Amino acid sequence: VALGASTGGPGALLEILQAIPVRFPLPVLIVLHIGDPFAIAFADWLDGQSGHEVAFAQEREVLRGGRVLLAPPGCHLLVRGGRVLLTSDPERHSCRPSVDVLFESVAAEYGAAAFACLLTGMGRDGAAGLLQVRTAGGETAAQDEATSIVYGMPREAVLLGAAEHVLPLPAIGPFIASLAGRAED
Image (cartoon, rainbow, N blue to C red; front, top):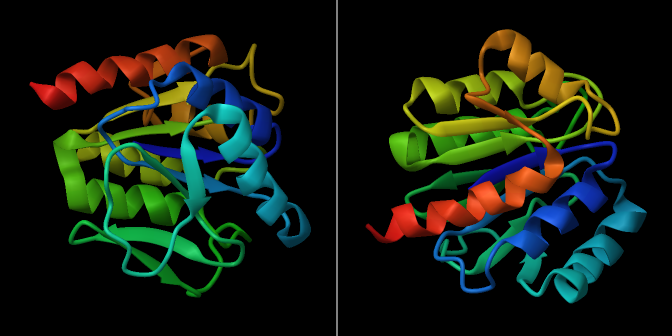
């Protein structure tokens, strides 16, 4: 499961994680556009408020279910061979970490087994990557306009045809939780 967010993302991510069972069998990877001074506090806050084990991703860390990993400030988060890779490659859409970079790697690594969701935020980061997940056979969603603080990133995904589902924020966590049963089949 890969999630991307910007403006309005902290509250949206908390609501989603609170709706996902603590023993969720899939890893959850998150890119959030957030400034350095707030990033460390945010990871700790999300860990304490969500009931999930939330931490910044570490280079070469093995992905495992029940864990929520955030892209560290200033680093792109990718997956390859079931492990986390962190890079300082150039910014995408003036962003590092970039949602597109995460989604593109998830599409390449997991294809039809992937789920990606683009949440509230300014700009277009994540829209093209979401389309890659969908093209690879993965399931995709975008937050709807009514519940987005800023309907920029999800809007771009919808316009590209990247979002298979357009969901209000309260429906996203339960939708992701429903993936647990499919993962165990």
